[in-house]
Image (cartoon, rainbow over all chains, first blue to last red; front, side, top):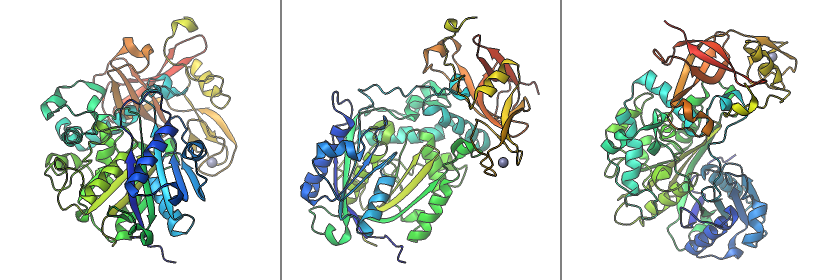
Length: 377
Length: 139
Ligand SMILES: [Zn+2]
C-alpha cells in the first residue's frame, strides 16, 4: 500500500478574522467569517467545497453541525475534532482527500473565550483542584521546575522563547502584544506561577481561522502558490496522568521519529519552525523532543539566538500565542503559509524560506507534526 | 469550623468512586485503590485496573512518606480563596509505594526541591472535608 502522502495535498487558501475582542460574535460566526476570507484567498465560492472539518471551541461548541447552518452548505464530508490545533485537522483533511472522501476541504477554528469570559482559572473537584493546582500554567510550571532541577537551565536561557515571540510580534500588524520586551524587561517581571512569568503563558483572545486544502491535481487551478503537505505524524499519551512523569511528554519522541523517518528529512532541512505555545515550556520540550536541540540543552541552544529575527531557524514568526493571539496554533499555519508564499511583508519575511514545520499538542494527551513546503517533494 | 468559613475549592466528596479516599483522610489515612488481582495501586479511582484489566479493587492504606517529583509556586490566586496564602506551593509527590498525588506543600519551605523528602499532613477544612497535604521532612 502506498503510504506516502508527500505532495498529494496542498493548502490553497488561508483566512482569519480580526484577533482580540469580538464581542457578540459566536465561535461559529468567527469560523464562517474566516472561511469566507479563506475562500476569497483561494478564489472559490462554497460550491467548490465538499468537505468541512471544524475544531471545537474551548467551550466545546463550533461543531460541524453548529457551523453548517451558518455556512449554508451540506458538504459530502463533515467532521469535528475535539482539539484540532490545526495539525490534527490538517492530518484528517489529508486522509479524507487522499482516500477520495473529499476533494476540497475547509478547516476552521472559532473562539470567543475572551469576551465570553471563559473561566480558565477553574478548579477540578479533585485533590489537585482543592490544593490550588489551576490554570494551564500550573502543570507547565511543575514540568519546568523539574527540568530546571535536572538540567540547570537559567531563567535567561528560558526567556528567549517569550522575548523572541515578542520580537517577532513587533513585526506583525495582526499581533496583539507589540510593545517592546527586552530580556532585562522579562527578567524584571515577577513570577506568576514560579518558575513561569506572565509572558511565558498564552494570552486569551477571540477570533476565527480557516484553511482550504485540496488535492495536488487541483491545486494548480488556484490563484496562490500551493503549499504542499510533505509529511505528518502524531503520537498519543491518552493514559494521561496515569502515565508516570506524564508532564515530561516523552511520547512526543515517537511523533518525531515518524516524521523524520517518513519524509527522509532532517532538522537541518527546516527553514521555519512553528510551535503551538500555550506556555513557553511546552515549546522548549518540543524543540528537544523533535531533535532541534539535545535533551537538557534547549536553553543553551535558544541563547545562541537561532530562533530570533535574523537567526538560522526562525520560530513562531507571527509572535505565537505568547504575543500574537490565542488561536490554538491555527494562526501559526496561516503565518507559515504566508512566509512560504513570500508575502509576509518586508518587516518579517524570511528570505529564501522553503520548508516549514509545525508542532502542536493537546496538553499531555496528544501531539502532532506537519512539514509543509511550496515544493511538492 | 463551619462549611461557610472555608473559601477554597472543596472536592466532590459525594462522588462514589472517590468517597472512600476522603473518608479515610478524615482518619489521617492516605489511601489508593489496589487491584485485587495484580495488586497494582492506582490513584485517582478507575473502574478497571489498567495493568491487568480486572475490575476488582479495594481502597487500602499506603505510605505517608514521599518524594517531591516537582513543585510550582503560585504567586497569584486564580481562585480568591488562595489570596491570603500567597505564595503557595503545589507539588506532585510520589509516595514510597509509587503512587503519585498532586497536593499542597505546607509549613517551612527550607530545602524545598525536586527529590526532597516529605510526609503527609492532614488539614481539617470543613466538618466533612479533610485535605491531605505534605510537609518537608528535615534531611
Ligand atoms: Zn490489576
